[in-house]
Length: 157
Image (cartoon, rainbow, N blue to C red; front, side, top):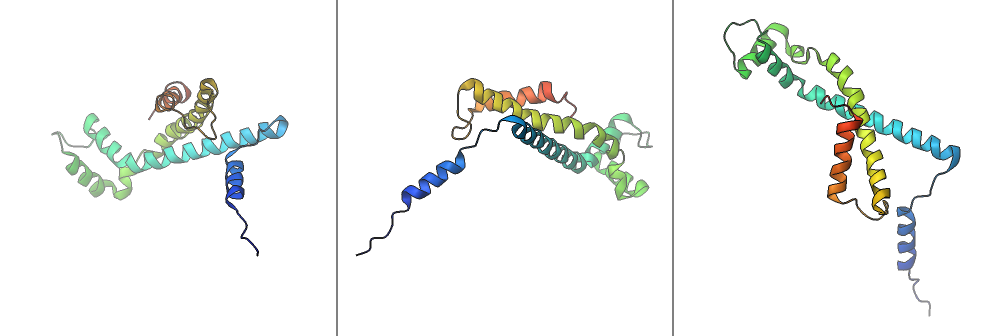
């Protein structure tokens, strides 16, 4: 009689192994860390670029209504400003000035995104938790985001 092989312990072992990270040391660890930081900065910059580009029409309408540079003496509603921009400048007029905004936002968001992870790792070490198996408590996660946004990125949302 052949009994079926019990694979439960093998699955548990392989899952546990997959959760554990191998410590990186030496030059390869530094190169991996630099590549990881570069990847995180690129992702943060891209996310900031997409968010700023998506919200630029609203920002442009807000700016025109605050400065009064929309060519009308009386105050206009947001909808009438929107229509005026499209009528006078075309649909791309809603994104006028977006390039200058991106020059400011992309580096700032790249730094904030990458430093958030750096602060999270620091708080994991200081709290004595295992980053591969235990989640960071909400208060510490919030603190990491605050430190990244307040000190790492310099602001400029």
